[in-house]
Length: 509
Image (cartoon, rainbow, N blue to C red; front, top):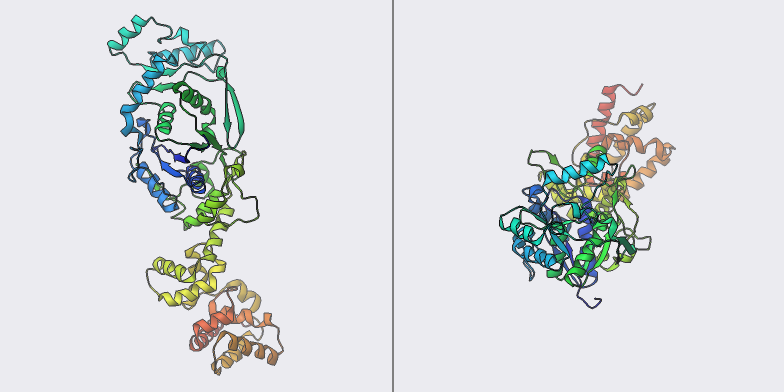
């Protein structure tokens, strides 16, 4: 099996938006394929038509595209193993289900939903709350193991509805090796006779995913931990068909940030962070924003997801997708659940924004502002304030004073610093700037230091006042860089306007 070409698949159901846990599963499949020169396949598993949500399939593919982890094969992409939507493969599943019945690995079951409900209720009355359809109870039900072959044939000919169930043997150990968890052993007495083929002519997930994985030559099944209890059944199906079993790897759960339990959409709503990669609108019109709409870059989102269950074994945290391609391995995926940290997610976004070229940020900021300002000026804005920003809009929040004169002034700084001879100092400093022959960052800094020496003052007695009048704020980027960007005339005019405002507020007394 080790010589098989690596082919992995991500197989979501189109029952709603793609949860970030699903994106992580897709990411790990993508990275494993890239690391091993393999193929990443997306297959839409829509066998449960009752839960199908219009637009969900398109949402899944669009989300993967935004994340930068598009498959090699999948819906709309082509490939030699299509179609890649299970409902379009419907005709192939029935014969395989019948093959299992012929091999006595499965059987026809004619029980109605009322029959099943009655048996469960009777079991509860007898103190058996977890009734199962299995090797012990199947003999008392209406199926081809309890009915005569003539009766079975008669019912099928008459068009009686039926399902096909797996015939689980009694008291056998099913063993398989998980690439993350090691050897897993489950006794068949703990597994019920799962439905493989439904009365509507559609296979269940259990049968369809086995057939499709075999037909698509999938070498590794990398999926969420929630599928671990189903893995023994899937192993038995491979054995029943006489097919090679792919290697399994069951990923740890994503846990909510404030306690135990799987991260859900409701946790995001409650704690104020997105759980979907991109915005999703329900059929009722409810809108759930995604990481894209919240200002995150796909690179930061993917970097964050990669660390939810995997680590490189080093202190490095910032990984490009290309870096992840070479660093990723299943051996470094944890068995334990990974707790989601929204603050750490913001940290990743902050690191990526800081590392982005100022010209790229300026283009994005320009679009955000409706192309109101020259991009060349916004490049300097980005350079001066991006260290204080997490998202593009933060750059404007932190640096709007560079493009627009302040109309409000920080009250805390006014109360703390605007006292005594503050107005006199700022008048004198304004006059110094007016007479400056050069207005570069370096020359302004030299002039400022000379002014402090002349006045026999420390930097804390003058610089906060200068910042307040020029920017309206109590803190921000280097004031000499700010001054050089604004230019002498603008700086002097802002100082004079600020002095007038302070006088108006009567804060000098």
